[in-house]
Length: 334
Image 1 (tube, helix red, strand yellow):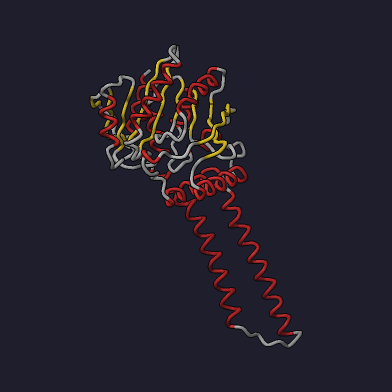
Image 2 (cartoon, rainbow, N blue to C red):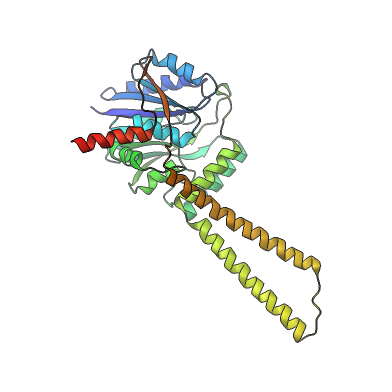
């Protein structure tokens, strides 16, 4: 008998939670030899998500609800769920039911077959065209310049072994890209492809805004690729050479050909382009330096305000730093 944990980050998903729980119960019924726990992490929702979760947990003993003190983001919310999970295998799935929970049955089978990482890779997606275009471009660039084993259309739905879960839980990185981190560990994944459904209108609108997508894009590349820095260096070299060539041509034209140096317009164009490139390079360097500063502060990636199980509140560590310190003291005492 194995214990399976299912982690769900929740942010403004009140309408889909009851249906999602029913899907989990169906998965558990298909795997009667296993025990399940359903961990829902409320990532600072401002709708009725936490109230709905609290009500559902009163009638579902396998359900655990963690409330974060504020909105930390999807990746930290999943990390919080991983830190609470006690299963031999731990899965993570979005709460909007665009990913089919029934696929967990096949993912568990893949894990039983010996794979420590099982990912559900998107073969196609029913999202609006701009969303699909942005996503496909992102994963194409990420595959090219960061991690080549990333599926062509990416993944957010995965199941990992306890060993992998413990490794991820022990990595203290802020602003990381969880899916890239899973692949970076090096365990050969078992890939199951599926077509991602469009979000049902009855479940409301996605809170995945453009600003969050851009931050996700930057965090992913800064965490796993040195390409932006190399590109900055290359741009600096190219424009320096062009400047030297142009300066040589001006001097030659003035001394050898007697051409008078003219052109306020051409001068200002060169200055504006050079200044723009410099600002771009400084911005790229600044993104790396900011994340380096953020890491040195050692702030917790998430803060668990409250945990509810069996409909009742339980004591929760204030943050992951406190939890890990307590875990360290336990290991040292043995």
